[in-house]
View 1 (cartoon, one colour):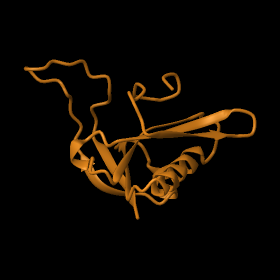
View 2: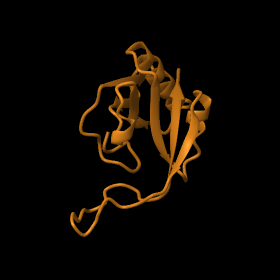
View 3: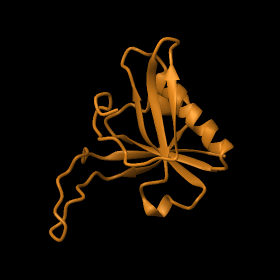
View 4: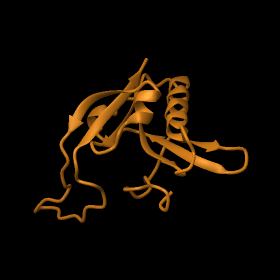
Length: 132
């Protein structure tokens, strides 16, 4: 996943993942886990933590986001969330029935009491959801 994701390192753990196959090879993957933000970790919400696809596969992201929601619902989740960078179009989200619910101001996790090296983009993000 490291060589195919544009701006993040692989997540540490997950609940489940789904691969997309074109008949000859795996062309994409979506990873779903517990929400990163503690406030959303209510037992009924899951989060798409990564979606990676090969560039030459049309509609792959939309298919993966839709499949992630179907699987999440089947597992008893009532809500599935994810974030996109504000600079990304969100076309795959819209095509698979998601909606923007919040704009998140970008920031660094580093602070004087706990200095860190940012390994993620610090630009603004959009919080998307799909729910039952």
